[in-house]
Image 1 (cartoon, rainbow, N blue to C red):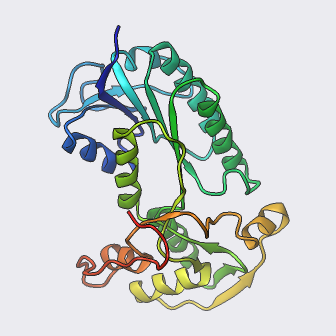
Image 2 (cartoon, rainbow, N blue to C red):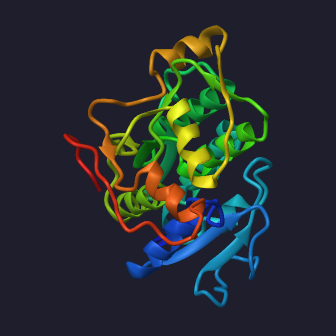
Length: 281
């Protein structure tokens, strides 16, 4: 079957990032097929649901049903991911994309995938390599940790009577909406290879992120410095999880995000901020 370049497949289309990307692609006039483990609501390729989006249930890890889900489309946007197995899922998807003659494969990855020695980041790097070596026209974007995951982390840590603060750990969290806008732009454009990383507009020590959360939530906790051991600890203290030069930056800061999601009155933030000296999207 010949590919229709107007149809875009989005894996993980119901996740944190995917549910923001899909409407942007629809607003651009593109047909969208969402692939997720559970599907919704049509469960078969070629039959759009009430939202005008074709939802298909496929488990990328076992590979069953991927081929039919890719029939007749031009672009794959691979956003699905988890703590393990991303390399396996991506290889399965790449194999099917080659058979379907997909013309553009877009992948989201993580800043530091090639530098921080953690198992889940090694899996991300293996996924990147599977795409780059596939023979398909491709684009990969590495993004910083999302605000949502940062919030989940500090909330969990704040449940302890004492807030542990790993020394030297810095993050540059980025808003998922800023990442979604960039992914949509890349998906609608041509293959670009490895594009500049996308990070948030400011770098924070974990203690700064914790204090911002505690203040926004009206909580008080004493902090206690701790040390991340081993090679991973050395990598984080060296800033290997950051891209301080040459990265694109989003607009929404950690404080903006907290004002929307944790602020006492629940009102949206009225400001946005940009870091100086960097390109913003």
